[in-house]
Amino acid sequence: MHFIQIGSLAIMTKWVILGIGIIAGLLVARVWFAKTQSKDITKAVLNLLTNAIFIGFLSWKGSLLILEPKLVLKSPMSLLYFTGGTKGLVIAVIITLLYFLYHFKKKAVDGSILIQSILLVVFATMMIFDLLTLFWLQDHIVLHFIKSMSAFFLLLLTFYYRGQQKKEVFHLFKKAALIVGLTGLIVWTVNSNLSFATQNEEVATVNHKVGISEGQIAPDFTLKTISGEEIKLSAFRGKRVILNFWASWCPPCKAEMPHMQEFYVENRESNAVLLSVNLTTAEKKSSDVTKFVEEYELTFPVMLDEQGDIGQIYQAYAIPTSYLIDSKGIIRKKIVGPMDKEMMNELINSVK
Image (cartoon, rainbow, N blue to C red; front, side, top):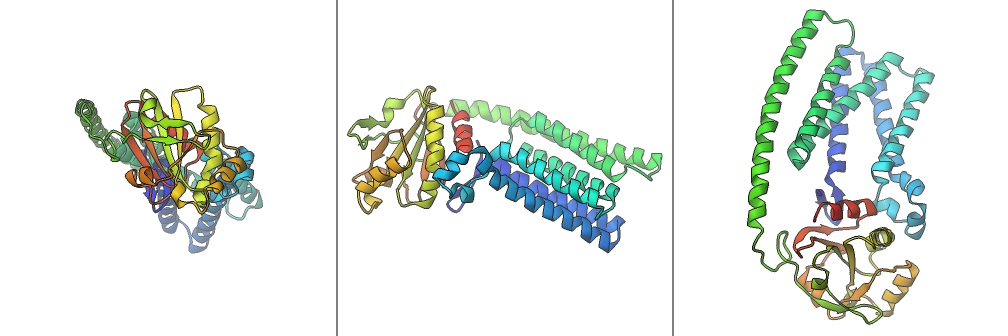
């Protein structure tokens, strides 16, 4: 799984790419309408598009209230740190379409121009999103190539859907086909090299050193839980582990805890494990940990780092800090910042 670290916030890369795609789509629409329409029409269309995107973003954030009301009630700060994820994005798209439908009936902008502007932004966004995903994440390369090229041709059709000579359109598509062919050649080369590199990586992962960097074996430790039970990290070899460091006074920790509880309950019978380590030396009072666990109704084991040694070893200086550890005990990701349930599920499913 891929994500981008922005300060103390971890954001899934696909959402960042989507944002870039939307901005690119707006720029395409702006350039096109500036060349083909009057300033007043261009301004009206762009206002509608930017308002729609703003409404869509707020709907995406607020969809968490609909999708996970219990989580939001337990931790209202979830609305600050998290979104409704993929399902929330669908809700946001529906609300945005209703917004466009309202203005279509209101006839604030000519219907054909409004439809063309929507199609321009949608197809440009799809094209940029899949191209960036293809080269940035290098995941499902062929699929993203086909989707991006399909969006590219649909974008061309949107540009030239009427009033154009057949010869002009034919020449345009010839040029487009040449671009697609060259892009396909690049994609094939990247895909071939990526497959070769993956094989070499598998060979190179035979020997690992102990450390906290990606690709190293997670340092072993033994800590007692609140109930006095001893838990050893290496005892979970063969299972995929999310190791989370937190403190009861930390706002983003409070935001992610209901999500962690949900993740724990849903994955309790699988080979996915959630290990929670409280940085007890950072607490004002040790009793605050028990109160926190009771308040958030946490049922997963909470280990106490009463000496502060484990937090130091894992460099949990900014909290929450989490590590994704595969079934061989190897660290695959370090995440600084709060995680929601969708992100945790994607993380755990990205390793074996």
